[in-house]
Every structure is written in C-alpha cells, then in structure tokens.
Amino acid sequence: MRITKEQLKGIDKYKYSGIDKSILSKYVLGPFWTWLVTLFPKTLAPNTITFLGLCFVFANIFTLLYFDPTYEGKVLPSWVYLSWAIGLFAYQSMDAIDGKQARRTGMASALGEMFDHGCDAINTTLEVVLCAHALGMSRSWWTVASQAAALCNFYASTWEEYHTGTLYLSAFSGPVEGILMICVIYLITAFHPAGPGFWSTPILTPLIKAFPQSLNLLLQVNELLGLKGSWRLERLPANVAFMSFGALGTVGNIFTAYSNVIQARRKAGKPIFSPLLGYLPFFTHTLILVTWLHAELRGGVSLVHDARLLPFIGYWGMAFSYQVSQLILAHVTKSPFPYWNGMMVYSLFGMIDANSLWWFGREPLVQSSPVAANVFISMSFFVALFNYIRFAREVIWQITEYTGIACFTVRHKDASGKWVENGVPDKKSQ
Image (cartoon, rainbow, N blue to C red; front, side, top):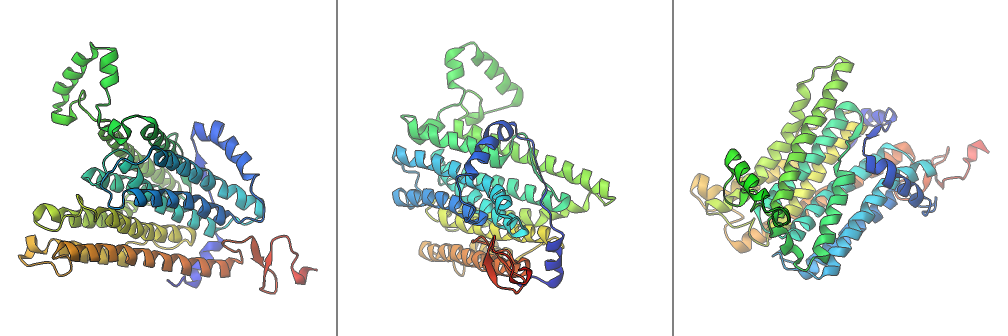
C-alpha cells in the first residue's frame, strides 16, 4: 500500500488524545505500570515492548495447538490455563507501558498508535479462541458470536476515535477490566476441579443452594420474561451468562461511542448521522462471514462444528486486523474513511461458493468436499496473514522514513538523513 504525500502530511498534524475513566486503572494498575516501565532500559523501543507482550499470547496459542490442535475442546492441563492468565496479564501490562516508554525515549509518534492498535486487534481474536476454549465452548456458534461481539467492540472504539480524535476508555473497558475478567476466567478454569466443565453449570446454583427461597423469585422472573429451556435463570449456564454479558457490553459500547461522536460533531458543527455509515464495512463483512459459516446448515461443508473453525476464525481475525488498521491509518493521516478493502471481496467469494448448492443448485467450486474445504480455509488464513503482514511492512517502512523515527530500535534520522541512536547529537548541530 502506498501512502500518499497528503496522508504523510496528515501525520504532522497527529497528536495522541486519550481519556481513561477506569478507577482500577487510575488507583491500582496505573501505579503498577508506572513502576513497571522503569524496569525496561531506555534502549528498548516502545513498539518492541508491545510486540514482546503479544509474543506471550502467541505462546498461549501454541500451547493450545499442542494439546488440542483441532480445537475439539479437550480438557488441558491446569498449568496451561494458568499460563494463559499470566500471558494475557503480561500482554496487558506491556501494552499499557509502551506509551510511557515512548515518552521516556522521545519516540512518541503516529506509528506507535498504529502498531499498538494493530497488536490489540490481533490479540482480540486470539483471546476469543482461548477464552471460548476455557469456557468449554470451542466448536460452537457461541464462539462465532463471541468473535463478532469482541471485534465489534474494538471496531466501535476505533470508529469513535476516528471521528472524535480521542481514545475513550470507560469506567468498564475491554483493555482494562475486560482483560482482567478473562484472566479470572483462566484462573478459575485452572484451579477448579471441573476445569472447563465448571462453566457449563448453572451460574445461580450457589445462590439457590444458599437461599432456597430465591428459586420462587427466579421462577416468577422466568414467567415474566417468557424464558424457556436453558435460558431459564435457574438453568442458565455460567458460560452462556458470560457471553450474554459480553453482548450487552457490546451494545452499550456502541451507544456510548456514538454519544461521544455526537458531542464532538456538534462541537465542530458537523452532521451527526453521516458517521454511522462507518459501521457499514464492519457489519457487511461480518454478515458475509456469518453467512459463509451458515452454509453448513443448508447442506454445505461443516465449518462451525469442525476443526475448520479454528483456521476460519484465524482468517476472520487477520481480515479484521487489516480492516481496522486501515481505519487507524486513516485516523492518524487525517484521510477519508475507508469503506471497503480487498479482503471483503475475497470473503464474498468464499460465502457465495459455500452456499452455491443452496442458492444455485450446483456444487461449490472450491469447497465441494471436506478435503477441498480444508485446503481452501487454511489457504484463506495464510492469504489474510500475508496480506496483513504486507500492509504492516509497507506502512511501517513509509512512516519511519517520513518521520525519521525507527519502529523497533531507539533511533532517529539526523540532519544528514542517517539513522543514529537517540541521544547522539546531529552532525550538523555540532
């Protein structure tokens, strides 16, 4: 991808703005992060710290693939779930201090925000995969729903930042409280004797055992709300309750984000409804992917309840990372909103092909059999991965050349255009 001269000039106008309303972040994690960053030498680039944090999550994924490569939902050794909690907390911590390290080293830049958000986008999908497994849901539509909700949360926050110029973190946000909540899920799964099976038990069972009279109240609520089957409150599994809570959080985040956009647009004297068009790329691509998965319900090759779900989720995650990174690039370069990208076209082909038997009465071209589907879905993941790496490489190279601030080393360009270590005076200034 080629960044235009106009976009590069937009980077000169970039200035990070963030509002964090989290009490936990302010009084507990904030002081910890301030201390933690002092343990890292000033010779370590902030983006390197971010990437090292992401490597902890990569290690967690590798343990999952080692013990359960087909994502069947096998019960893993307790230490694996414990390592997931440690890895995620390490990622959160290193993701939180990269900005502090940037200020310590004088390397704060638009590229830093892009790299940070890009890693966050990748981590979002990886944690969906890990958390769904820890909750005992693995190959299920709940994992698909969780992926859609988690990515929607991320997209809404990025969309909000594009239109307001500010990254808002509410009193309960995904990067802070949400991550800690997932860490707790991993810890409970690690130490509870039932492991992931614990999350299949009704969440209100302890309440009913402690206060038997509460069952009558729950039954009345069931009748009032018309709840049936496993959705009845006394039968509601803990994992379903958690997923439902996440869905409510997603809806709340969308409304909060739009509220902040309305305030910013009114202050700037701009229309308040046109920004909503920015949701079209995300929801369109999500609908395409879900329809692709839906083909198994109409005679197509199984994707959701098969080992193919894991590479498919991987494809979805990398395609989303590409989509949201384009949005972040538009934000830092003051460019027009990106409404489409090539991966959406690729997904559209996969969706039409998977549903061709149902829609057109003919066999799919590339997903006509389980083996063919295996090859195509796996290939799709690598296509999306390569596309995102290509995009990231090109953007990093162009921005570092323009700003004169390195990505993974604490260096800058001197007056003569040569890369030198920070702290080394420019030759022409001597």
